[in-house]
Amino acid sequence: MTTTSTLIQTTGSVLPLLRVLFTVAGFGALFMLFKPLLSGIVRALVLLVNPRLTKHELAARRQMRDALLVQEMIDASHGPSHAAELRAMSSRS
Image (cartoon, rainbow, N blue to C red; front, side, top):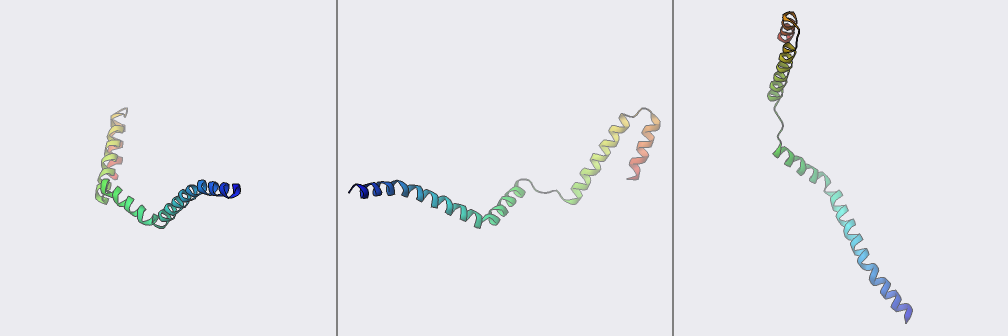
């Protein structure tokens, strides 16, 4: 009688642990199965919040950044000859 009661008590304490283990394994399997779908949804949400810039907008930003950089270099130059040289370099591009 004591061995069967011990076996029932041990089985009773192991079953909830096995249930949690199988539940976690099931959710892990579902996540691995739907991972491409979930990553696509996340990418779509990111693009919804922060859309990509067009090629024209990127080119305009690049030109503005280059013009500001040349202007800073002209302001920091040590004379009119350097400024003229920098202006000539910027007009080529």
